[in-house]
Image 1 (cartoon, rainbow, N blue to C red):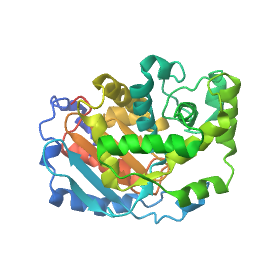
Image 2: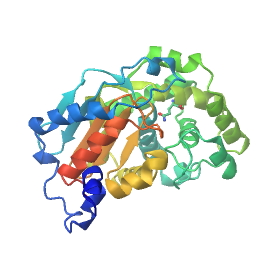
Image 3: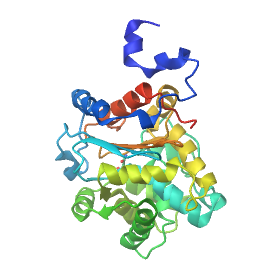
Length: 326
Ligand code: GLN
């Protein structure tokens, strides 16, 4: 392996016989190690793009970077712009899945949505058409819109509120609905998501496309800080009496294969942590049996994943020898 590869990819760790036996672990992380990572991550933001289809997201400062690490053993560590709140956008998807697995059970959920990865963009209509209207997985828009239709409520606001309260109670986070963001989401018509909802309805995977879309838009605007997001990640990091371990494992496994859209497989090989990104620049990674890492940085790569966020998770995974096998 060349020196260049060693520098740029954790993949260089392949030859390490201890790769799957974490020896350093999240507990070794100190404030002194985290602070310089923010400086390096700011460099990574360069060349990243802000999404334009949600005007409010386009107003973010592309150099904002925040990280919060929560640990099962030990205090949390945080650095950067940690007071800033942001909408979770697609990062809510694994938590919608978790909620519905707990409420409806595995069979009901997976009769409505698949669990296969996709090499198409997150809002692909072509993928849904190729799959004859059955959403391929819960981490892309088609799957999440189908599942949003199961968040029972008379309208989007009530379904979202049920989820918000359930998550806040179980994770001790303080998620709130960002009404201004929701207004911004609604200000430009999202024809792609509408076409997805209509096809889901036509193929029998959605009863009320309007309510499902409204609910989906609401839950994408649930907002919080990196601390709140790391607390959510903790729901997936450890066995507790409040979440079924089987459901937790299912969500983590789907995150490994589908959490970062087309970048999922490569990230799984290189980093191996269940991770979800959102178009706001939010990222959460689960470190099974150890804790969770939440990042926020709005500049995105071509796939729609936060550039600095991916960089931070990669760096932490490499230096602390983290992996998803817990
Ligand atoms: N609300 C956004 C959308 O449907 C969420 C997508 C994302 O975060 N990737 O476009």
